[in-house]
Image 1 (spheres, rainbow, N blue to C red):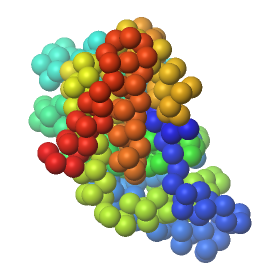
Image 2: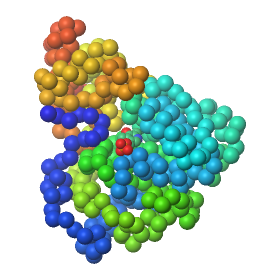
Image 3: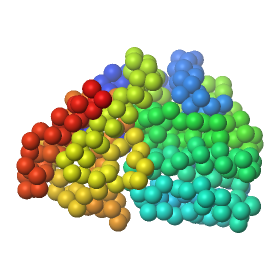
Image 4: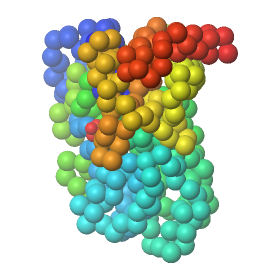
Length: 367
Ligand SMILES: *Cc1c(COP(=O)(O)O)cnc(C)c1O
């Protein structure tokens, strides 16, 4: 079965092998050397001043940012499940919330942010997804971040890059915290969360807040290549192995292949009559709006060995999402669009003539 869900993504064989080595104790020079290497490579990936690794899923890192970087009032963008989650975390932490809500296909607008900031001068932190995975939507995060900093540089800009870091280059000039999780573009099993931080964020964290997610104590420990609590040793060993895999061709090659695959997939699907769901599609996944989303997904899974994701809440049964994150062999993606075309034939919607794989290959290899 080809795993084509936008997280978890398949773990490369070499990485699985690296993680199968005997258990190391985390308070040893051997593990500290591994941690140091992972930390340096992560800092380079983020292009930011500081970073922390946490033993948790991505949501833990989202919560750590809310607790440590928002004192009073948060502004959040809710254009899907994950944006909604930021709002829920803010409220559960007893902070005030101003939420800008959009349909799941609609990117956040600077004008709305402008109005919200003008009406709420006590907002001290902003939370947004770079790529909102609920609808495969790309928000104009860099532009909004630049605007916010031009109004008030003290507002912390927190970007959830869980389906964006490792997918495309992200301009971090105006971003204070960039959240990542292991099981998406970084191709690891779930359980490791990472945050890239600006020096302004480190300053605002100060002594830190919370117990488990106290970022001040983590930063202090991690600067010494250790962690406050037991490190996710196996996943950090895996992270170095992932960087080894990425470094074979380089990060730019990964970005380029991801963008080319996303573009070719979209062209192939549009060529056989599909409509992309988001107004501004993210490169992390290809999201299609279709009344037959469920029968198509079912045929792919039972007949063609492809596992794609569906939609949640009001988009349940209405969309399917094809992963583009990670080191995906291009022939697998070509097979996915071909399978979708075969499914359309079986559903009596369009006779199969090989258009999808032809357009995919032409776009990928010749455009
Ligand atoms: C997957 C995901 C998360 C985090 O989910 P966890 O299950 O906690 O790892 C957060 N934001 C986005 C955009 C995601 O895609």
